[in-house]
Amino acid sequence: MVHRHRRTGAADAVVVATVAAAGLVAAATGCTGAGAAADGGGGVDPGVAVRRAADSLVRAGSSKANTSMEMASGGTRVTVRGTGVYDFERQLGVFEVVLPPDPAGDDEHRPITELMSDGALYMKNRGAGVPADKWVRIETRSLSDGNLVTGGATDPLAAAELLRGARRVRFVGEERVGGTEVRHYRGVVDLRAAARSASAGQRGALGAAAAKGFSKGSAAFDVYLDDRDRVRKLRQQFSVADANVASTTLLYDFGAPVKVRLPAEKHIYAGKIAEQ
Image 1 (cartoon, rainbow, N blue to C red):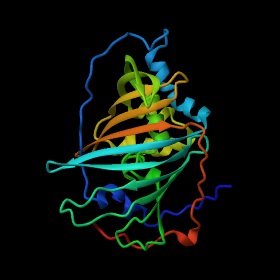
Image 2 (cartoon, rainbow, N blue to C red):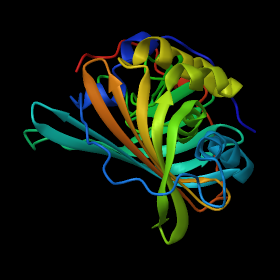
Image 3 (cartoon, helix red, strand yellow):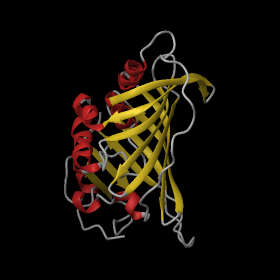
């Protein structure tokens, strides 16, 4: 059984979250490569195939995931990596996020444990004055990026739900990801359209991102789908305020068991988060 506890204290102070704690702001790498066929292979419309990818993940149940978020500031490029498992049906996941060393190279960050649920992000080993045995809880709908950037590990379902707003989709070609045959598609997401079409658990967060989080109303993507239309690899580029972020999510081992127990109220930190 999953126990959920709602708390908004410290949420406003934590919006900077993991990325800000590491002193990270922006990154951008452009999509490259040439297009190929006019459809998605076998006569499948590219837009239809991509927009139904989130539903295919829910039917799959769960998977393991690797995430990578590339950012740069002042000419210094850094990458935040995450590894975990996600239950798409229950909208629950657990990840370990590894931050890069400080630019001076004299400070190693402990991995941050993140719990993702439908409506909240929990972080442990957050730092910034938070006791080591306490969790920080953030309402994802209070985040201007819909938990696509803040935690340093993009919520896999939120990323897939963005594809519901896919536009100008084209089939690039057939490739292999992790030894699996996939179809590669490229396009642009209309953020408002994605928010309107999102599932109940993701609609609030993506709506906030579309309304105030992203400086552009769209985001470029490259997605690789297997023969069941499940996402195997998804790369998205976001413009948040004056920052550009490139997020990559790899999904594998579908059906992997997911055990997530959300922290009790007494284990959630309600104090002030130190500025980084």
